[in-house]
Length: 102
Image 1 (spheres, one colour):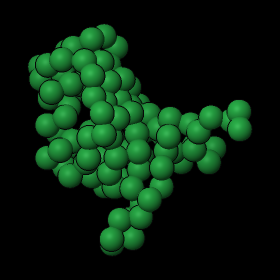
Image 2 (cartoon, rainbow, N blue to C red; image 1 turned 45 degrees about the horizontal axis):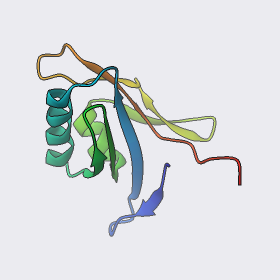
Image 3 (spheres, rainbow, N blue to C red; image 1 turned 180 degrees about the vertical axis):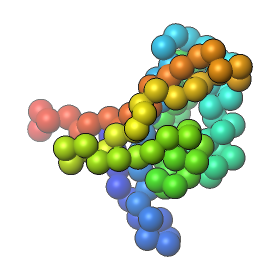
């Protein structure tokens, strides 16, 4: 879920997910390294996805994308990101919506 916590400097902390199109442990390792180098915290990862959180600036820097507001919901622009060490794999980055069944 797209959490909006505040970091010490007042920057919101955003929680997001990256889903690979197919299972690829090597691509997840490459993405984890990029995210961690930018200061993004990895919450969970598998061979097909990563859940993480960080500031907007750190996320944009690590994934070479922009975080934008679309209809009062955060989104990545573009949502497709390069996930492979050789640029062959792609993944989708997104901010999960809160469930609306409460």
